[in-house]
Length: 493
Image: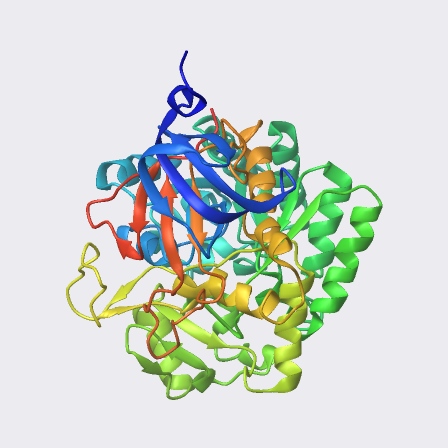
């Protein structure tokens, strides 16, 4: 008769001796996690594996899911991997055509899982300005200062925009990304119509809202009010992107509004990142010299990433907007050294449902070397690309505002629920239950911290001992597996 040890299965990979934190199952205990192929096989004690990775002293959790990342490249994915992220999705800006975005990522290979929404902005740019998308965020950004796409659409043009979005939903996109804040002349009816399309297809929208009335008293409708109205009137799942940077010092008013409509039955989810500076294309309509004052900004509050310095004055800002409108800039909205502004950032992070990075594409000073690791000094980005989740952990768990299980909910479980809505069924992520995708982060809670700064923006976070994507170790004993491309597309069937 076989002994118990002899009859016990041997799994492909076992993460041994860590503290397993899986709020989806109510687990928080010292256990082993066994993986077989691309799925979780078992969670238990004394599991046997052909490959065993030591997790002693570490938290073992479902890999973090970033719903809002524009860093869709090998180098960007690697930075996010060291921040604990196993799935990174381009949902706010989205892509058109999504088929080209997915095909390009598959051909190049990706370290972590990826996916795209249908881009309302790219559809609008195509219909109103005549520029066809190629699935790249950088191409879309280069047209952001073109007033042709920012105007109000005619009824016939609206029909074309909606038709493009429905085609992209049929191609597997994960909902609709709506950058209405970049086209403030958009009609109120068009936004409602897009929300109705999303509701009909049972997918979320991901919105960068129109300006708040607090910034622009003459705005057609307060951006927060517009989003929650769409949720109430259409029944669509409205995801409120980076509530911190679009609300700033009015974040409590905005989140109070969201809580009220949720009590009334609407589906609205929120996200935030833990920085006082945002980042976008310098050609964005709200960054014109004439409009900076609405947010209390001066040209010198903008850091031009391609120039690697702050903008000198209004004349230089006009020049940059005219010559390189898609060039990225870092916008210092809040003073991170100010106690009052730090409290605003903390309120946004604490009260939002989940963490999301708004990670930015890499800008290269000199020839691009996206496949190099470590990234060379010529690679620049916003520090949130590398450090959002570790910094959020420090600001939330380290400050005693939430416990470890709640952080994992915000970093993995709740984003997985939004993703499930986008997929129209279980996401198979956000949990370590048997059969779930084998996307796992193993991190030392005492060492997990962000290292990226505004001056050294591509420094990877510290503290991730192992990161497994689809059953394949991408980070092992703190070291990147340089040939690792285990990322797989996340796509609606």
